Length: 381
Image 1 (tube, rainbow, N blue to C red):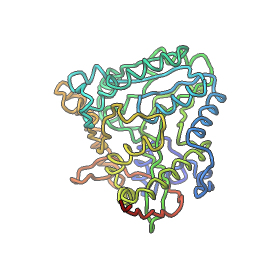
Image 2: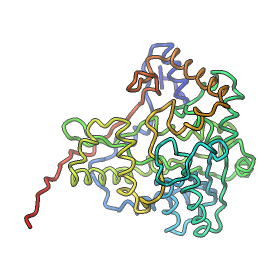
Image 3: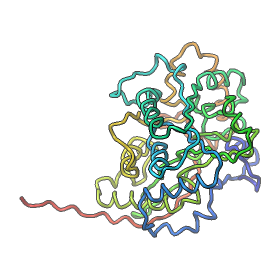
Image 4: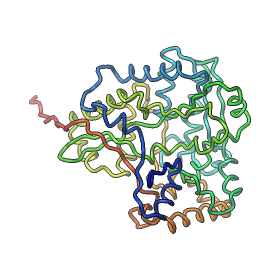
């Protein structure tokens, strides 16, 4: 929101704010989250709260599509439906096998962020076989979105591709969730049912500040990372549902935050990783530690690549930047980024090397309580 005007696009909001020299605010359920008693830990277990959310969605919609990556967040959603015997109408998984062929290494030991696209073959495909066994009535749709991602930039042909966008401006994310490009998906929407596209966003972002006060945070950059809505211009019967970041499941988010807080208190050596944590710290450390802490359904032996720490020239997109056959697409992409840098300089962040890399992030913090680290004593033998 800027100047009392609502924007669905972050880019559009920041461009306008730069023109009129007015501040921007991000609206994300403050009316509910701002009144919620975050200091009170719910008595239910996390699995009970995940199950409650899954039942709520199943009862609310006629047709449920789980946008599935195989990662910890979406796998936990899947297992919640399975253990309750709840039907998932469709599992939808996108991948970029054609575009990344030859640029990935199918070696589970290579977990570098540039090998991110190996997750599909090393982890997601075996999980799909498991899903077919456990949910034989569920439709499984695999979409190789390579052509959509590469050709969409070419079709724009210039910097205009940035208009109307959110935070998902990396080459691999821009058009990855344009499910409406595919006829089968549109055919389902045309039936007029109430359809939910469930996204696994996200484990809670948490931090310690203000003399050991522990906060749970919501950031617009995270909420906009899977931009399904950016591509839906036709269907009002489809709702994109964040499984985790939703006001209907504040109890779940609160419980997650208390579980993390208690874990840090019992492991005080982790405190420095939460005090004034940088984006890199969250991506490299929080993400890995929280998988098994918050999800009983995650197996740490499963393959998952490291998280990228850059925003625009993203490590996940090594396949794009290292391919000389995509020079035209790279040029079009860079035209768009240069346009943003020129027209909204006050909202563009710099990385450690002083290079422009992403937008200012808008965040809402809610205090859970004060951290009380437990002193560990050595036992005499």
